[in-house]
Image (cartoon, rainbow, N blue to C red):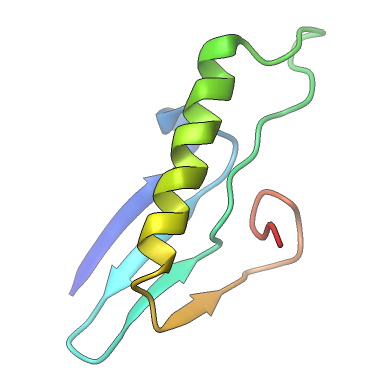
Length: 81
């Protein structure tokens, strides 16, 4: 089994998307990413916006290969229609 974090706070976005691959299926958990609109009274830094764009591209690429999507709960940082 493979478990690969796609996004996380330590990767520059406020969310945790995870890819899981077993011999039977491939799935993605919480396929979204977000930034806080304001942290310490400041808007997102351009590097954070760049990290968000990169994360969403990576999620889309990985999602194309997945058999299942798991949404833990309905917040924009876990699910983005």
